[in-house]
Amino acid sequence: MTPSDQGGLIIHDPTLRDGQHAVRHQLDRDQIRSYATAANAARIPVVEIGHGNGLGASSFQVGHSKLSDDEMLSTVREALTQSKMAVLMAPAWGTSADLRNAVVRHGADIARIAVHCTEATAAERHLGAIRELGAEAQAVLMMSHMADPGQLGEQCALLVDYGAQAVGIMDSAGYYLPEDVSSRIRSITAAVDVPVIFHGHNNLGMAVANSVAAAKAGARIIDACARGFGAGAGNTQLEVLVPVLERYGHPTGIDVRRLADAADLAEKALMPAPPTIDSTSLASGLAGVFSGFKKPVLEAAAREGVHPWDLFHELGRRQVIAGQEDVIREAARSLAAQGADQ
Image (cartoon, rainbow, N blue to C red; front, side, top):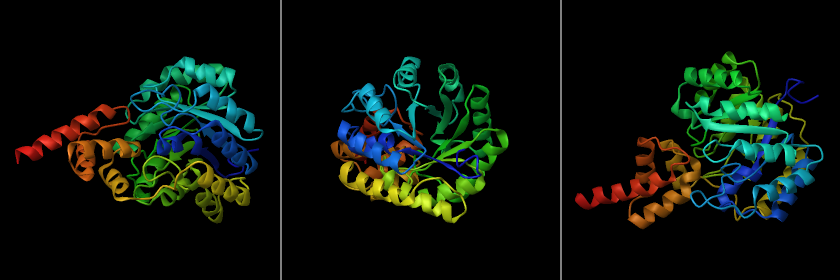
């Protein structure tokens, strides 16, 4: 029986996937194995692995990972004796062949499809493939602040019709406040009869509070990373979230002491330093821009001589989403030209 069956929550840990954004997807086999082993010992229910952008995403455009998908998947599968292994795939990067490889060859228990918040239809074929392969099919809506609660409920209902066994939202830009989360989760739970997912980012320092708000509003799968290891200012901090949720009466089944040990290991073994809310991450959150754009925005702004805040707000005005990295450079050049004309 899972914590969710007991009225608790399932904690989904994407440290080894979302955290890759913070180190340009360069985690090696020893780093991956050590954290997966520690997470397994802490009884974290689900451990997600992969390139930061998911299966099949290693590329020149968003960065080549140090290890292949096969190397990452096999390493984590060997380390997990009680935790489930999960993968994420965005249709812009991966294919049904990548899903088949992850599930059939490497034994992935859960496969998530991530699509833009108004593009649920892009997940239909892949969710069907996951169900046929025998894994648990989940789906998440990225950049979800770009849609209102009613729209998100409608999109999640479509995802369930396509075969998703859990659905939810990513606060990809770290834009939400707790009230924003509550209204969206309530709309989704009213629209579907499967567990609802929330994935937070910490650009405004609200990730734990937002995750608690999601749980109170009815979410049953909450994502969080050790030390918040993730894109931009990082994700919801796992070792903080779990005891906070338990104090609120939401059991998780996780060994909190071993979870703290796993977080200590993650800080030492995976990251140069834990994520912080610096001025650039703050600008990303305020502008509603994907957290993973932090480094390319800084590079483009420096190259063109424009302020990163101005570039983030220009990207927010254009409603740029993950996968449109080429727009960052074009927007920086446009801002530089505007400045030269003034």
